[in-house]
Length: 119
Image 1 (cartoon, one colour):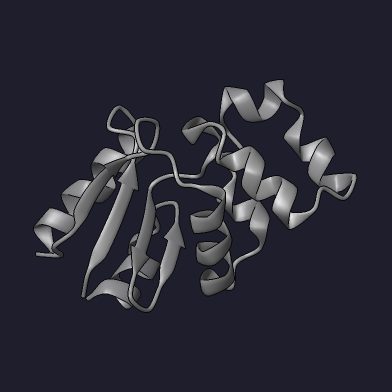
Image 2: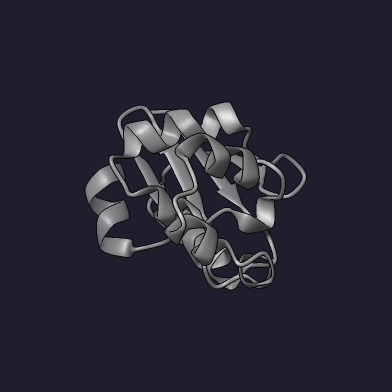
C-alpha cells in the first residue's frame, strides 16, 4: 500500500507519528506540509475520500487558525470550496500529520485509528 505522510518536521506529534510508522514497518513517502502544501484539488479529493467533517482538516490549535478567525468563518457558512482554497494557501492551517493511502485518509495522530487502517 502506498502511503503519503504529510508532516511539519518540527511538530512533536508528527515526530511521534513518524516514529510509529517506522516502528511498525509502514513504508511511506514523506512530504513537508509547508514546503509542499496540499492543493485545493488534493484537499477536496482527500476530504471526500475520508468521510470526515471538513473541520477535521483544519489545524484548530494553530496561531494562524485563531488569527484568521477561521472558526467564525466556518460557523458563518464558508463553503467547502472556499475552505479548500483557504487551506491551500498555508500548510500551517492544515491538520497534521496527514496520512493518505489507497483506502484511507487520516488527520492527526491517533494510534488506534492508524493501527486499524495501516496494519
